[in-house]
Amino acid sequence: SFAKPPKQVQTVCECILIMRGYKELNWKTAKGMMSEANFLRSLMEIDFDSITQTQVKSVRGLLKTLNTTFEEMEVVSRAGLGMLKFVDAVMSYCDVAKDVKPKREKVARLERNFFLSKRELEKIQAELLAIQNELKALGNKYEAAIREKQQLQEEAELMERRLIAADKLISGLGSENI
View 1 (cartoon, rainbow, N blue to C red):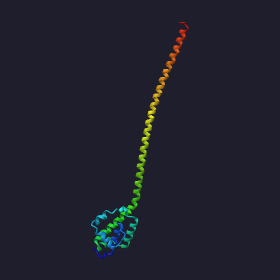
View 2 (view 1 turned 120 degrees about the horizontal axis):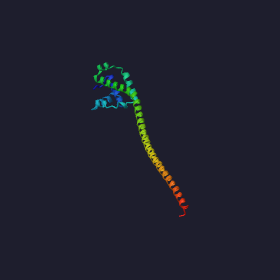
View 3 (view 1 turned 135 degrees about the horizontal axis):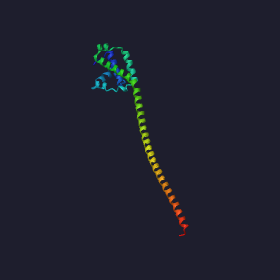
View 4 (view 1 turned 90 degrees about the vertical axis):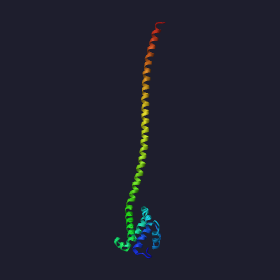
């Protein structure tokens, strides 16, 4: 509620303006932002992962020019201290997120590859099972054909013996002139 705030408070407010994506960095815009009905809730609902590296660099630059400790800020403004701690925490989060983001992306890529490979493996296993079942069916058919061949061969040999016996009988009867 300052008409003209202390420089430290204005700088911290400008940091928050940057993080929230505002283009105009001035006290009037900051006052408007802070007078929003759900200002504190809106701070907690910021998508911290969407804060760009450009925004982080801008905030870091402002914090560097601020050159104020938490203790010094507390003397100037308790609300300013709370916002400074918030900005500092968000910057720490952004540092960690910057390192974690490529790792998350790699994990997501590896998980996608894993699930694609798993699906491919399941498909291949299903094909293998179908081929094994077909092979087993063909093996059973082959064994049945071999048994039938064996049976037909035995019948053919029996017929051959009967034919020879019948031939001998006919020859024997033919020599008796009946």
